[in-house]
Length: 188
Image 1 (spheres, rainbow, N blue to C red):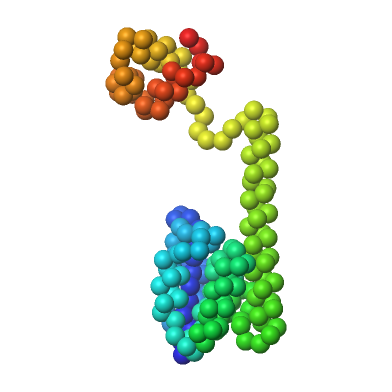
Image 2: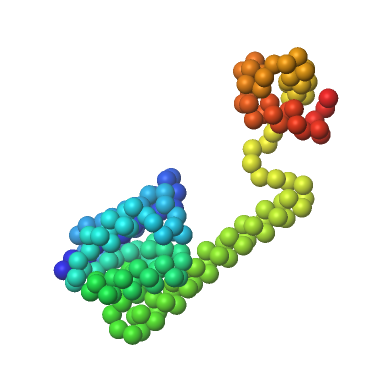
């Protein structure tokens, strides 16, 4: 019987030290990790290895329920699988564990809230992008408008030079050359 930990951060530049410290403090013997992997993905290499490693009597320990996953269905599916194999589950921050009916009910509720939080964040992001687009702003890197480069690209193309060669001569990407040639809003 062992406490086995799982830690995850969504982006490669995030630090999982807080999770690792909490897991060690909770008596975890071995920790599996996923760095730069979204919780919305069902397949995560570290989690997959962790689930394979767990044996009857072990307890899977996570820092917070949303580290296991953002989809209620996925979280509950993993916990059901663990329960059927005789493996316990514990979430440190949320104070949840699979023992008893109340523990299982709380896990279901917390998983639903984790999914709601993620969905709300996605809605806010989409609404913000739509509002920005309505104001004429768009995301991404601002285009460098070099009217002389546009003129040169169009002139070279009229002379029969292909887009790859034009890109090399102007020091821009081929995609930029195609944009110069196609965008009628740019000066002629």
